[in-house]
Amino acid sequence: MPFEPASAALSRFTVLDLTRVRSGPTCVRQLADWGANVVKIEMPAAMQGSDTMGGARHGPDFQNLHRNKRSLSLDLKAPAGRDVLIRLAGKADVIVENFRPDVKGRLGIDYETLSAVNPGLVYASISGFGQDGPYAGRPGFDQIAQGMGGLMSITGKPGEGPMRVGIPIADLTSGLYTAFGILAALLEREQSGRGQWVTCSLLQAQIAMLDFQATRWLMEGEVPKQAGNNHPTSIPTGVFSTADGHINLAVTGHTMWVRFCKALGAEEMLADPHYETADKRSANRDRLNAEIDRQLSGRTSAEWIDLFTEAGVPCGPIYSIDQVFADPQVRHLGIAQSVASPALGREITLVGQPIGLSRTGTTIAVPPPEIGEQTDEILGEFGFGADEIRALHADGVV
Image (cartoon, rainbow, N blue to C red; front, side, top):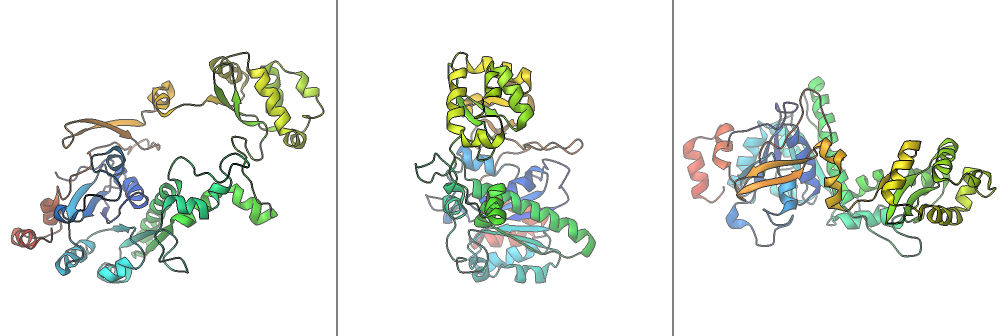
């Protein structure tokens, strides 16, 4: 299968993907979806174990992470396999890896080695805790980063203990941050002609995602606590009960508070001294929430959403995942995208990019490859002759 770019935006760049599991593949997926020529380098099928990290190859998780890529099988532990990678790196623009920090050095494929072959190479590394420091050698895992990065201490209801969030947010955001770093390095290379080493870790990404919760401590010395479904500083904002379920409300500022009370049909709350200022609404949060729940109990979620939307009060339903993709706005946005999968013998639907570009948009051009599916054609594109390719197969290197 020749290279079929998913977008024209990054189609001039070639990326060697050495990543596994989630954080690295998330990073490379951004580049692949925007048209980069991504070569996913994997161990030959004969070397693959039965319990591979990242889940079953034909399962939804793997399929969603590895679309718009081609696969080359390569034994990096064999000297000849390392030599192949070095030749590939000589012509590539980007390499992305998420090994433990010491592995790339042992394999002889670290930044220093490969940048000597290709000074313009942008080399990106994602780790659990950083490339150096006291924790550098520890294995990284999303939930560990959620805990060490403070997220679990502010997630969940007060008094119920720490709670992880429902997605691998440290994995995902470290991948996204790294993709941003790669693009910044590629832009800088247009001026200097030189590549550089881009690094990120699950721990750093998780701490960065704390955002205002982190700066509450750094600037004011305030340690944020768990607030459950309540917003920690904007009140009343959170989950509220209706006649047939729950809705989200976000009532921020005095003007919105007035609109909300009028739409609720509870203008008496505007005169209640317990709620007359933001500070008082915060101090009396539990009392206010109970009163709002009482008022909302007389109508359904859909009825309240219509009323609050008409009044200009931010609100919304709380969907299960199937309901998300049934919503008319979600359907209109087209974020669920389908592609034919020869390996599965059917069309599969994956989660597309949430970003739109007016001229060089993206699509899911090709499904995830099978292991080594494009090995010969990729090697040929990088200048390997037919005899060399046959020898690599004979020696079990590819």
